[in-house]
Image (cartoon, rainbow, N blue to C red; front, side, top):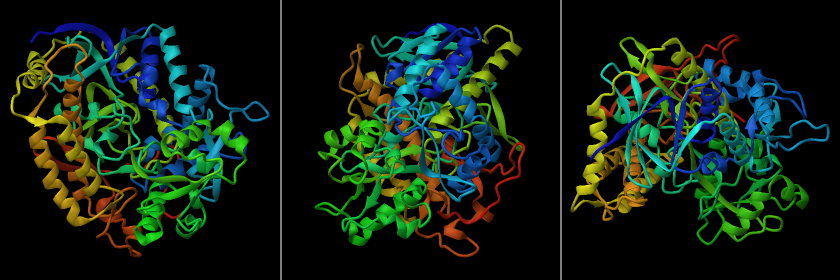
Length: 595
């Protein structure tokens, strides 16, 4: 197989919120920038974000970034790096105002300021009561954000390569990243995008689970490419299950529904969250709500013929509020549950939603790896932002609406860091390592020539069901051990998948096989990291981690207040300490996490 080379100052892989914000920073600085994306930018998965973007604007009531920082660290069960959290929360207001100036149509309150709604885990005065912090455009906030950022990129002539599949990271023997190898879906042409800076904004890998709120494009492509290039993946044991996916469909019902006053009820009509989170109730953090829902179901108070879901009640709300603030949710209920939420309860169940872990980065978006005694050495030329990255602002459990804030703040900071690096180093492009590109071509050649191999669809289902059963909302020590064995067996099968269609034009079978190559790396990292963490923390709730005064909620800070780093080579694990020191304020001290 042959390939061509195209040179750019910078290449961004992914055109969701983080990718568009990074590309905007690069293009506005006058750099020749390419953005590779599997789908048209405004169809990226950021479009599915409904409820809002967090910022302590205080438009409806008093708020400040210190409270936001505290809530984020508490929500992440103290697994967050506090310097990164402070950076994000202090830059939140400016990021949202900047987006407003780009033309994003936020909802407004009577005085003309941006409308804000309460969200789970966001509290006033260090946990006193829920606060309005989520800046919303009805329940289509991500959709509005993507359009605003895409239009701005068009204005500054960012060059988009739409319907391209990135294959592998190009990293030379010095460890420097020099771009990516990618394939045009339309023609199967292979191109080496040669760049001085490479930014991954490839999104999450939610399709590693059988039941997921994620789109089918969320296949962990950036994580798979990074792992194959020798970059470890951080904290992959922490997966957030969103409390309210439509039962049987997995489609997301935004937390904004509960922010507007929606109530969770069991089959008896009881508002059960008062039992588990007497202060925050239905607006407790997502891991707490998800576990509470499953406890109700497991104890026989679930609804439906199989008693396998609970209800989300909006019937007491003003119909005009729902139709104005939550129009998409009204439509989703009708289309996917056959329920008019103005008159009936919505059937909901926790569903895999968001990865807290990812490619290790610092607050500047620089990808960092262990090197000798230093566990966070920047990889030259390589940056990451958004859900594929782990700046460790979400810790063991992300607060709702912090994800869109993450995209904006770290999309911008990664772009700024890349611009600074390129301007400091004005030398020509380094030579490309041909052997790395040939490995990508060999992967494609194997798919084109493999005979008698495994079926891609069946293998992917086996992987998804293994993760769903062995690394779900509740985790059991025996299932975790069994899951490691099973997922390694699936990985052996993935190495020998076969596609029947060998054509070149829009061959979706080939794309799905390549996506599975990435998903299996995420699956291995998740299962192995989860089995090794012998405590409960945030979204990682083990049956053998006992609650005690020394270890509240089963959390063992003496042994496990550290980040997991999974290395693909040998499935090796190593650890690095959580950064407990913020930039300019006192650290948020450890304590029991309650709502």
